[in-house]
Amino acid sequence: MENKFAVLPRHIAIIMDGNGRWAKQRGLKRYEGHKVGAEVFRTITQYCIDIGIKHVTFYAFSTENWKRSKVEVAAIMTLLRQYLEEMRIRFAENEELGCRIRFIGSRAGMPKDIVKLMDTVEKRSADKDKVFINIAVNYGGRAEITESVKEIARGIKRGDIDIDDIDEEMIGARLYTAGQPDPDLIIRPSGEYRLSNFLLWQSAYSEFYIDDVLWPDYTPQDLDRAIEAYGKRDRRFGNAQ
Ligand code: FPP
Image (cartoon, rainbow, N blue to C red; front, side, top):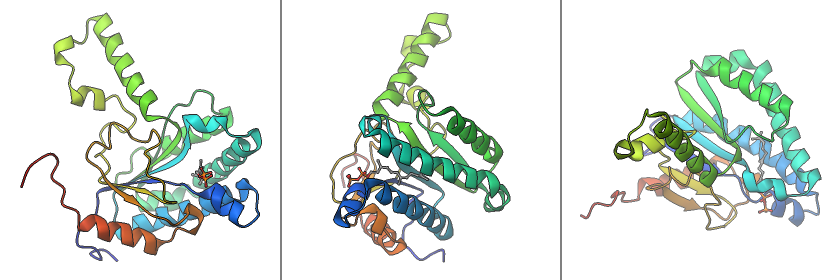
């Protein structure tokens, strides 16, 4: 299946949006939309692996999503828990794929059992390097940058860092995505033209692809379309020509 595309992004980041609208259109509870969305997440993850995408990041839960109803938050946590249990049980399969899974975001305020499962899944896959899957949970881009700055400030206070040595690399090295390439392509289904506090630092030169399809309806063919469109973009990174 490889070589299907003229240009393959190294890192794709996806904002899984539209679950609520999808459910509403069908007279279902919002939870049902997230449930199907979680299935689509599995399908698209596998597809990214199949076509040779090395880094994939999914936005599953933002720091702002706590404002949603208790029922909805609990439903998303349940889906996350189910996925984590599955990852723990199907460890061998994942090992074979060489898949490293990381959860980016703050662990503070997350249910303890989920944090434990996240740590287990992360630890068990820590030595894999074929595919990198990041799942953003309790994630906020501004909070991430703030934390990095705080850590640098602590270093200054200790006398380990000189202010004049602060540069972009130093800030980037203290983000959750340290060591990973920035996303080449950010996909947002469901027609919204917003970044919603996702990968603010890392998206400086990312290409955006907005799709009208709602996330629960998202298919590998939709991803193909986004990758093909990406292949036609002229990425200049601030250069003229
Ligand atoms: C945005 O759609 C979606 C979310 C806030 C939750 C996404 C979560 C999942 C797909 C499940 C996570 C589980 C795993 C296993 C990663 P929305 O509710 O904002 O949709 P709307 O804009 O149509 O209301």
